[in-house]
Image 1 (tube, rainbow, N blue to C red):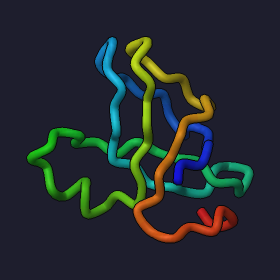
Image 2: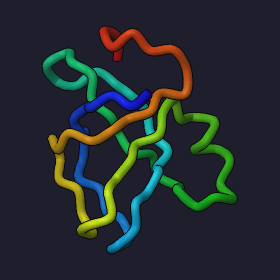
Image 3: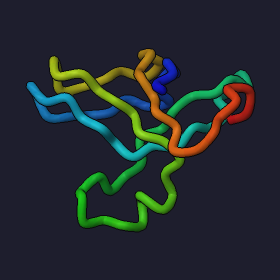
Length: 84
């Protein structure tokens, strides 16, 4: 089940494609959860997948998603929403 979280940093994506990116849920500057897209999104890169605790979903339009934008996040494990 996806939860909306703000994006920690601006991120780029291919135009016209919906994308699932490896990500981590962290505590933001105000102590609230944010999601950070991990470097190394190529499918053959295993290390970022091992570091990921979630998928972030970017919709098809646009090539850039700005910092602070609410994006859908699918945690890879049980997540209570009150820890970062």
